Image (tube, rainbow, N blue to C red; front, top):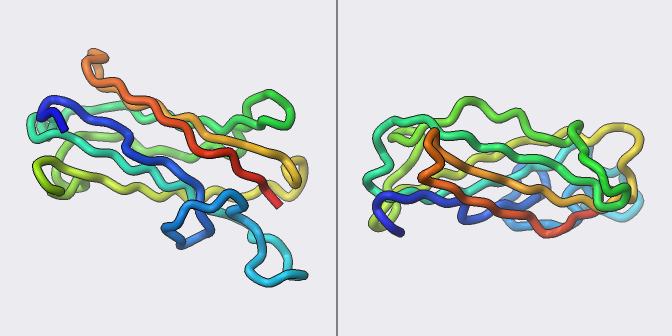
Length: 141
């Protein structure tokens, strides 16, 4: 990692409380049970040593409904203001890392059987740091 850079190293969906990527994140654990009412979106960010100044950055994550071709704002996470610094970043190798988990409620109607993906963009105020990442497609049950 360049000491003056940061990037979204990973973004994926998982079952609530999980860590392993899952392309059916609200699927029931046992056949015949009801699907879960929410799932988690995990965003991992890596940052170099010189970015840890406490400066703000913007993280935007948007859900896209591939089945309709439109946005799915009801699945967008609520992201609090973001800052480079410790905490919340933790030392990791020659840089820093942050894992953020957002719980996403599944609407009762309009999404079952739809295919989705998330796009994420991270940038600092002067756009000297820019990173983009996309999840694998996932199906809501």
